[in-house]
Image 1 (spheres, one colour):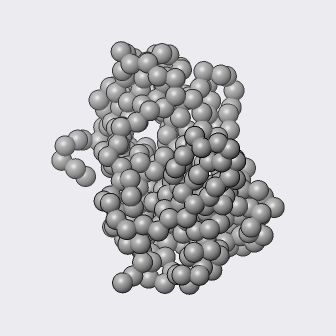
Image 2: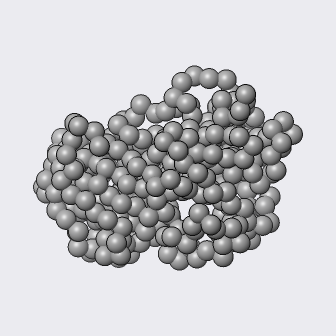
Length: 319
C-alpha cells in the first residue's frame, strides 16, 4: 500500500457484497464521506466459472446469465443528481492469474464470431509486471476496472453488459493507477460499484475478453458540485502504448465504408500477420489481439471509406 493514503473501508467479494444489475433501489453497503478511500475485492467477469484449471470447453459452457458480479454499491455523502462523482484509482492488486478467451461463434460475441466456430481459452500466469502467453510472448500489465459506474435514474434492474451514461461496462484501458474517472450522478448518494477487472487489454477488447482477473481495486471518492457532464469523462496518463513509451509497432489497416467493417478487416489482417510471421494459430492470434493490440480510428473524413488501424507492439515478443 502506498503511504499517501489510508484505506477507510474494505469490501470483500462475499455474496452479500455482490450484485449483478444496475438498480437505484439497492441499499448501499456503506456510506462514505468525500475524500474517503475504499478497497473493493472484485470477482472475475464470469463470477468464478473459470479457474486456472479451466479449458476452452469450460468457457464454451459458461453461463452468461448473469455475468459481471459488481462489488458495491457505495453511497457518497452529499452526492445529488446533477453533481459529478470523481473516482481516483489509487491501486490495483491481482491474484496471480487471469484468462482471455472467445466464445463459440454461434453465440455472436466478440468482433469476429463468424471466423471462430469453436471456443478458445488462454490461462495467463501474472507476475508483478507481465502476463505470460505462448512462445515466450509477454504482455505488460496495466490493470484497470472494466466496469465502474453509478446507479441510473431509471427505476428497475438494468443489464450490466452495455455501457451507459452513468458508466458501467466501458472497458477503457486507460483507467489505470493514478487516473480519475468522472461520472454524472443521477440518484442521491451516487451508488458506485465496480467489477470486471483486467490485468491488460488492447483497445478494442476484440475477442470479448481482456486479461480477465480477480483483483482488488482501491479508489478515493469526491463529489463535485461545480462540474456538469452528461456522460463519463476521465483524466489519465495512459499508458497509450503497451509499455508506456513510444516503441516500434506493426500496423494493419482496415478500409471500408463502414467503421465496424473496417475494424473487422484491420483485426483479420493482424491475425493473418501473427499467424504468418509469429507462428501463432489463428485462435492464439485472436486472443493476443484482444490483450495487446490497439485499434485506432485513423480517419473518418475521406468519404466514402474510413480507415481503422490495428497496432501490435513488437516489444512483447522474445528477442
